[in-house]
Length: 74
Image 1 (cartoon, rainbow, N blue to C red):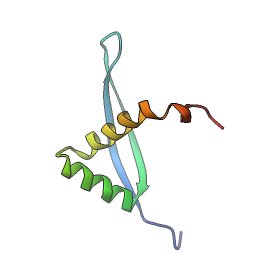
Image 2: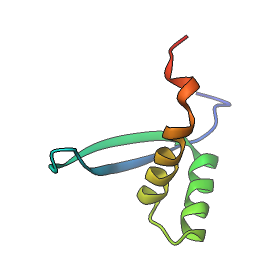
Image 3: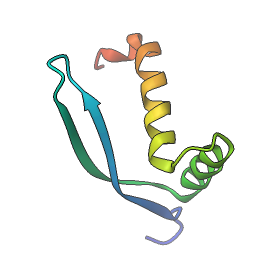
């Protein structure tokens, strides 16, 4: 699409979590995001000495608890 911002694809992003029962599980996704956001995330990950995957998880988990007002759909 002409004029559209470039999109970066983050492939094989995965998350490991431990459930209450103690079972580990993993979900893999392919994530498309604007190239400038990808570059910013890579920069933030390097500054924090984390992988890109770990940086994304860190930010999602940090924001998950603070967005209780956003839990309701419009």
